[in-house]
Amino acid sequence: MESLDVTSAGIPEATVARLPEYLRALTALLDQGVSTCSSEELAGAAGVNSAKLRKDLSHLGSYGTRGVGYDVEYLRYQISREIGITQDWPVVIVGIGNLGHALANYSGFSSRGFRTVALLDADRARHGELVAGLKIRDFTQLESIVREHGVAIGVIATPARAAQDVCDRMVAAGIGSILNFAPTLLTVPDGVDVRKVDLSSELQILAYHEQRKLSAGQLPGSHSGVVGPDAEVPA
Image 1 (cartoon, rainbow, N blue to C red):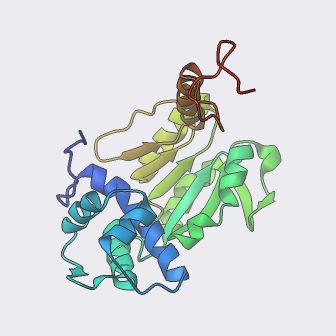
Image 2 (image 1 turned 45 degrees about the horizontal axis):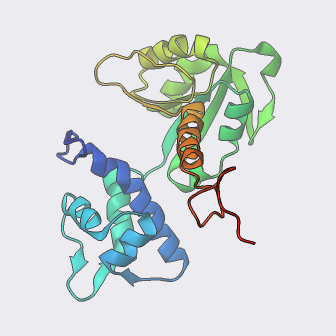
């Protein structure tokens, strides 16, 4: 059963978590030249069932027309407005190692309403290095950058041992939302939101499912469901 936790706007957290998928699907439909779609079509593009989609959208208002479906461009705008990406959000990335470097070069941020305004690192040897059009700056400049650009979102891509200190500094500077790629849990005061992205945990979950398939004999390309030394092999 899904969590019934709701946001301050009265929308269930589970619904909020699916809104980016609806936005992605609507953007893809627009790119294909589709102007209207049914709930079934949108649900299929987003990877959910149509009943769940209709329930999710009901929390935002009534945007569909019976017998016609959804106006793709209008619904995309309404979801973008609900999420808060009808404006650019300035973002600062701290920790420009391999992962931070990749995040800085990720074009998906700018196309989805997020503008990286600064790349920060504590390693003085990296200062001045150009990455994705931005010079790596000293982490000690965090506070002035937050004030200058009105930064509300910070990304942590540091080693685990440095993540909490970076987080504390971000919170003290006025950053209220943090995306954490460091493999550690962060402690933050009430009112600060943290989203944790643990790539190794995601891989471990996939490994679990692969192990289950192997245990059941469900190897890729297998149709019999029985694979092993005792399995019958057609002549």
